[in-house]
Image (cartoon, rainbow over all chains, first blue to last red; front, top):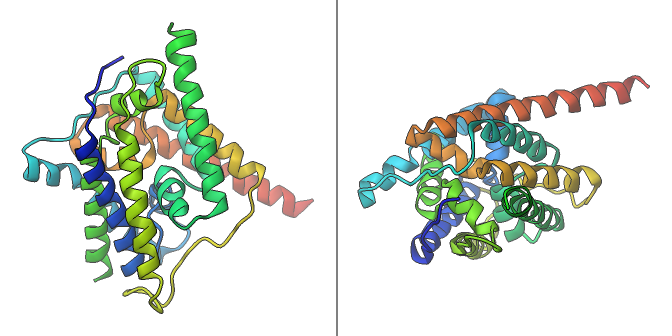
Amino acid sequence: MIETAFTPYQSLAGGVLIGLAAVFLMATMGRVFGATGILAGIVAPSSSSDLGWRLALFLGMITGPAAMLLLTGEMPAVQVPVSMPMLAVGGVIVGVGVTYGSGCTSGHGVCGMARLSPRSIAATLAFMFSTGVTVYVIRHVIGG
Amino acid sequence: MRLILSYIGGLIFGLGISLSGMANPAKVLNFFDIAGSWDPSLIFVMGGALIVTFIGYRLVMRREAPVCDKQFHVPSSRTIDAKLIGGSLVFGVGWGIAGFCPGGALPAIGTGSVDVLVFCAALVVGILLAKTLQTRAAANAHNN
């Protein structure tokens, strides 16, 4: 377990930018900003006409850390308190879950909730609940 | 034009994720660990993103169409079914194990962290696995 500092202002600024990105993508491309849909559209494209903008968006996303370095002089911290096998197993489970659940924290949690979509509200409650239970079990039942 | 605007949208999102702490599994897992090393910062990420998107979407959707498309592509389904809830519950289990969600992990690729690459590779495997299973299930349903 790694202790992390409470960062309300920086996290709020980050959240506002995430929201602005979602609004910007809707205003320009008319699309919801869902990381799951963007990644799935790149690794398993259903139409070639959507591949280009999704790749451009993906390239923009991965330049985010460099933009933060330019602005603040620091790269974002990536502290991983879990083992490599847990990352790999967790990654596969996340991939299966978001595909069946049609979205993740950005698609359902931000864009869908902002539209007051009943599906997205239900999905967000479901995954926040199961994430909380999983963390509790790993840290306090198995690990405790 | 579509590609440049998509890149900018991705960049704003990637910068937001980087600043917010969503790219840091230690911070994400601590948010869910209310019984342990709780870090409530991510409430500010979600709050900031939701307020901006909620207001911004309403302003943008007053227009006839987005800048680069003839229409807004907004998911129209309102069905809350077992696939949505089951998939979302599964996603949360993976998120609780690994600490990364797709929207947090994709921008973090730009930090060059090997942990992020392992998670993202596993995420892609999970998405392709689920897509294959869905295609098979659809083909079976069609044949019967």
